Image (cartoon, rainbow, N blue to C red; front, side, top):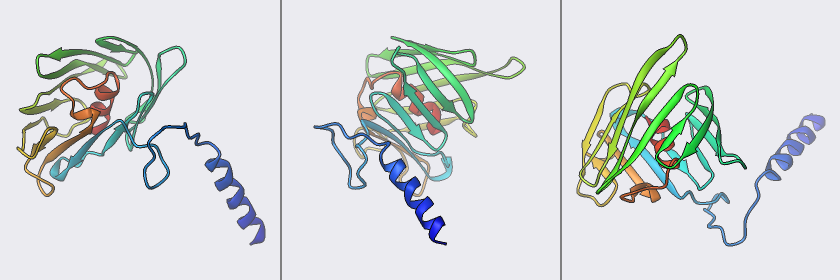
Length: 187
C-alpha cells in the first residue's frame, strides 16, 4: 500500500512539473492558462468543447500543437496529423482546408481523406448572423442563426442546439489556423 502511495505521488509531482507558467500569462482558478478562445457546443449537437491558445488547440477530440518549425502536430478524431500551415491554407496527407476571410466572418472549406481514398467534404462558415458546419465528424449538417445574446452566440440556448464562441473565437476574423482546427474538433 505504501509503495502505491509513493508511486502515485511521484507521478503527480512529475506531471505537475510538466506545466510551465510564463510571467504575465493569465491563469484560471484551476492554475491553467486561460485560453485565447473557445468553441462551446451545447444541446442536441452533442459536440465537445474545444479551447485554443497561440500554439495549441485542445479538446476531447483534438490535441494539436505548433512545432518550432511552424508546422502543427498531434491528433484530430483519433488520427495522427502533421499539418503545414500557411496563411489561408492548412494541409497534410489526410486534411486540406482553405480558410478565407469574409467581409464579416470566415469561411473554411476542404477535404478529409479517410483511408482508401474516401474523401469527405468540409464546409464551415461563421459570420455575425450565422454558423454553418458540414464536415465528416458532425452527425448532421449544422445551421444556426445568431441568438441575439451577443457576439458569438448561435442557436436556441443551453437546452437546445446552440454554439457559443468565446474570446478570440468570437472575433470577426479569429486567429488561424487555431480557429479552423477548433471548429473541426468541436463537431
